[in-house]
Amino acid sequence: FSVIGDYLYVINPVELISYSLANPSKPVESATTNVGWQIETLFPYEEYLFIGGNAGMYIYDRSTPSSPTYVSEFRHAQACDPVFVQNDIAYVTLRNGTTCQNFINQLDIIDVSNVRNPSLIKSYDMDHPHGLSVRDNNLYLCEGIHGLKVFETDNLLKIDDNRIDHEKDLHAYDVISLAADHLLVIGDDGLYQY
Image (cartoon, rainbow, N blue to C red; front, side):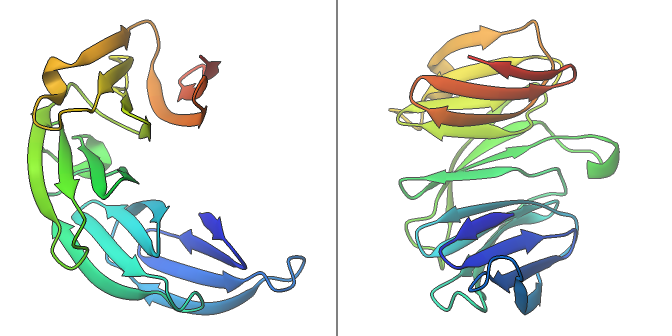
């Protein structure tokens, strides 16, 4: 879910649902949109909602906050698909797994400066990527049983050559950069703070 201004946006496995928070103690549903299937993540960026699902990344315009509208999508083979967007670049992790079928484990870097025509910049092989976060020029990438990796993103064509850290002693599912000097990682045994 995400709260932006007076609206709450919620995803379930197939829909994007908008709620008015004009009266926060009594949210009112304003629209329900069928997005696709196996929807997993929702990331707001500027006037858009980036939605990650098993079949791709979907982009919705929220310039009418009560009823976001479809803009475009970036399709990929079936895989679990978290997404994070910063500076017109979408970072998408794809991984295999029981509910995600079979697929290569990779990080896709996608140019979304033209939201109507997102384009792949480059793909990188990964071990088993899950959630991710970007702060300034650092990409924090959870690799499940393979831990947490940190990459520098100054050169999007050489991210794999710019790994600056690898915490191997944890099982990392998701990461949130709370501030430039505060990272929260969710893993098998709970929360880790860096």
